[in-house]
Length: 241
Image 1 (cartoon, rainbow, N blue to C red):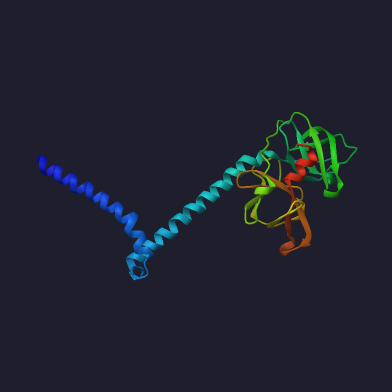
Image 2 (tube, rainbow, N blue to C red):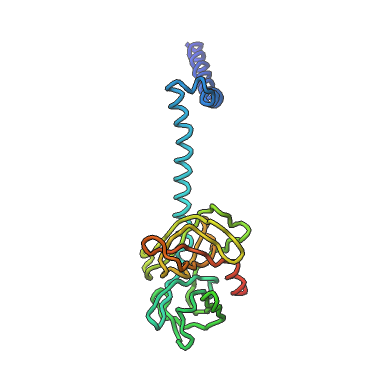
């Protein structure tokens, strides 16, 4: 009886080893061989080998986008001014240093609305050429994220624009695309968006800040415009960070 059990276990283990060898060694050989590739069963094996990794890659990529959005959504605020106009503000530091559009801020106003909260602020610097203003607000306890390095930003990299529509975190616009071209002064993307999203931040899938949107003045389909980016490296230098 013991001999029978031992024999059975031996054959069982050998069967597992043989199946592993078949899967690891023989299947790739059969799939890559043109002669065996004609047979239906081999075609099915080939299809499974090709499709499954691609599906896994897509799932991982989409999951990466969701995680990146969760990471950065508190770094971007909705700025409202006494003029009654609104736009994006991006948090550069956790102690209230924000960058936003110069056209949003009146030099004589005493306060702004940050996510509908009335907030005192000070103007630290202006860049009229690029329509940017650096302001310091108080007691906001803002979230921040790291800056992407220009040397690591490459054409073909997936990126996304983030724009809050209200202080409610569920009301936001996310537009995804790729980088088309990079130089030290401007980053070109294939994203099309409305002019009203000027000054909103762009991020990579690691949740790193790439720069602020500069919508081109050349309308495309459905009154959308191509998205260019004022690089994070320039913003960092402007803010003295």
